[in-house]
Image (tube, rainbow, N blue to C red):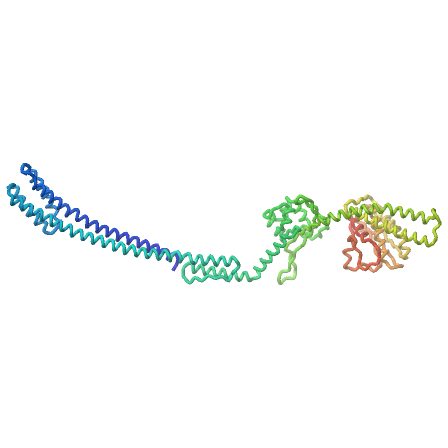
Length: 561
């Protein structure tokens, strides 16, 4: 049975019982009232009239006329109040005796008969009162009985409904609530069993269907994916480096707490928003989006120095990486771009150490340069024999000392140059220069070394080359370093090819040796600082090519490996 039908039936039954109880009570009270009314309106009035007539007969002789009038008035109303069997005959006889009395008021026999008639009327009404009182009492007993029966029946029905109807409604709700709590805690095997055809049965069926689907969902890969997504979100938020994820439309998918700190934005102000629109009002996001836009346009993003960002009341340094995310859909072969991840690595500690290292190297190199120059000057005095004759063995020792001093001076110069590069204090004097003259000076600087290995330097240069905008000294230093490396790694009696030629709107300088070359896996690292090809027997600091790269790029030129 439906819950609505149960409630309607229960409340309707109570309503019907209340109406029945009210009807029986009114009917019984009405019957009792009728019985009481009959006593009052019939018998009591007759007794009253009879008493008045007796009083009239007791009047004195000088008031006979008044007594007759009073008697006749009460007799007249008594004649209209005949309610009992035999009361009419008694009243008629009383009327006859009264008529004789009016003719002869002093007749004592008639008076006696009148008294006896009145007494008979009073006796008849008293007997009627007793009889009607018994009837009224019986009516009252019946009223109490029936009202009690109906009340007890109503009580039993109401008591039954009180204990059964609320429980019938509340218990299924309680059971359903407990089941929902079990499912909320992860127990998707919970089921509700209601066999009734009420709304609770339908609700139980719907609940069981939902629980079954939740159980299937929990066991499906989608639930695992959601769990993994939450795990990844937690990992990203716990990363100490700022991370921002973009979809293919450059809308922000996620941003961890570190990225919110440096951008000064709240989650609601960045998550789901267009990064291009955010970049209009946020300088940092505009800087981050430059490489994303360049990657979308197909142009390779340029390597950038560390970014200096003011956040949390201090300056921090970050290295930016823009990672393109691509997937290959199932059944397809071509990857599809689905977004970017912008990762900022906090390198503040390393940057501070690098600054300290650069300052230390610059200071030490500068301090080394003066004593090394003094050593070379002393060597020159010894070799010239100005302070005494030097034998051949001593001359060899001085030659070795000079080579070591030259090597130390070269290393000190390279350290000074790299400290300039790292501090960004490269001093350039750019002016129109003769390209061939620059290459020629570099060749002459390496002429002696080349002759020692019997290596020929072959320069290929077109006639009437245009002037180039360059720092002549820095460019000569770079070319000298390249030629020196080519000689060092070339075999004896070989050739080092030097080339100067116009290339688009630029002038190309090229140095090519015939040595063993560089293994392919190390080609991308030759311009890194302090890098040396593993297994190389040549001496060096690994700074020459790194400094050359910085000098070339500082002049706005390009380099190729």
